[in-house]
Length: 370
Image (cartoon, rainbow, N blue to C red; front, side, top):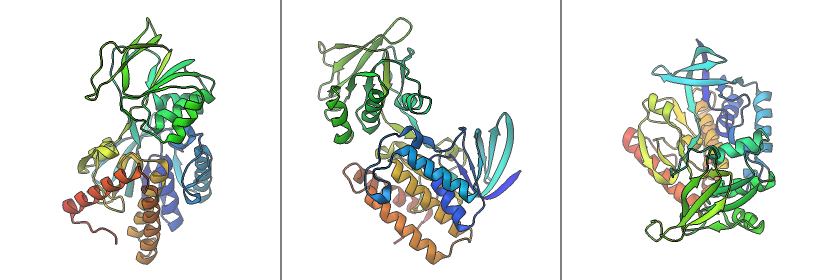
């Protein structure tokens, strides 16, 4: 069985930033990821980030991913790819399956950065070939350079739905419409404006009633919704399409945290059930941390900052950082997180995070960093 100071499960932006911070402090870090290349969602994100220069404003997601991979390589982080975490045990041991072989890795501290899972929407015809999650479509066009169809309907006008709509246009597809059940667009107006300028209608107070086709998607039937979110008879509309992208939000991937015995809470603003954690991202189980979408679905910039926060705290707890240096470093990250959560979309997440920390204090008597 292999041993290390810090074991990071998940090589997306969160796991990478945690590995960087802990390794820079002197910890022996092992990072495992189920993919053949770490970086996670960053390599699907061909759009430029918003915010300030501190938060990589104006830099495309895949370029940020390349920077992080270069830093992880330079620091010599032990990275295991094509490695799936199959279980977690009481002695902070994680079972892995890599290239068909099983093994065990024990970490003094463990970060679970397993991301999030797309929400499904069920309607007649939802199992037809051509109906897929927005993340699947992003993977196909931005990672594998495969266009899964020619004419798309996108369900959901949050940032993910709006962004995938524009990326499909960039890939040469025709986007027939973006369909949104709420009366207002859910994402940033800047994303909505880009696809509207391209001639894509956004149908608010509407949903998909049915998808029709013999062996694949051929038609999408939409219907208007009333103020009670119920379909209005006689408002059906038929759209020609061979693909439907469902962008109905995400929920945290918490299976490993559940196996570890972490206490959970429900926070709708952050995607649903997730492990309670303190201000340094440690869960109710000593030595097990969560960050990024596993700790609540937000933006990539926030996920990276949470990874840094966890890495700094781990390094301090392991004796690689003095308390004074760790407090200063964590305060800088927390200030950055407050800035990221200061906008209209982030304020609800900020309040939810405070509620999580308060629940954690009740559960374990944790103290909030002042």
